[in-house]
Image (cartoon, protein in one colour):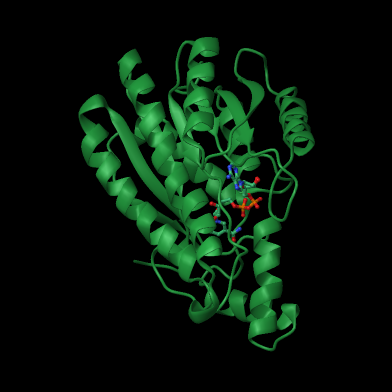
Length: 282
Ligand SMILES: NC(=O)c1ccc[n+]([C@@H]2O[C@H](COP(=O)([O-])OP(=O)(O)OC[C@H]3O[C@@H](n4cnc5c(N)ncnc54)[C@H](O)[C@@H]3O)[C@@H](O)[C@H]2O)c1
């Protein structure tokens, strides 16, 4: 993978990018270092697994600091916006505001997700089911619906990347809503790729395995409890079954997104690409 400057001046919206150590912030930093003007968005609410406004602003400041070491002519710029991906008005307004400010929108990274409402299938409340599906599947649908016309308006194609999961390919216990939402996201990716291909917009899903982010550490604790193991033993078993011998890092996902956004990846669409150290191979 090269780091050509094909992204210089492009505008990228990343959802759910506010949390420390999260995948979204890492993708934002990667795209900014490749020359994008990045807009980090998040729900800006306090609560379990949610990034608040202060966190979002801190992430922007961190990325701006990181950009300082890059020559001005190469680095992009960073800003933030509040966007609840489950609300159509919020999504539509965020996309429109970015277009008004930058006069273009080239890249959307559907990263926002919740993965902490786990329970056995027979105990999942309808409310929790809907909450997970709304963030993980309705959100990417709304972003695609409202961003695609703006990409088409500029006539220069675009990139939509849906951050799915290993759970988009395999089932896991106590994760019916999460697994269903991520499997659904692959379906959305395929249909979007078919419908938007004629406009030069590629749509792909990236499927990470485990990464110890805020969401990931909650899952470590939940699943090690479920299996009656210490977290240490749970993580050791995980390392054992991953051919490359370690869980993922946020930068692994950011690198794949950086590649998919570049001109070199312009013939790749409708794919669900594993970035899982070989743990998931289909
Ligand atoms: N960490 C992992 O092991 C792992 C593995 C596979 C896939 N993923 C996926 O990667 C993505 C990022 O997860 P992460 O691990 O960085 O977790 P994270 O908790 O750091 O990030 C999730 C973000 O989604 C945001 N969010 C939640 N509800 C929202 C809403 N209604 N509107 C806007 N934003 C909302 C949260 O505020 C948070 O910033 C998720 O889609 C997740 O499913 C994570």
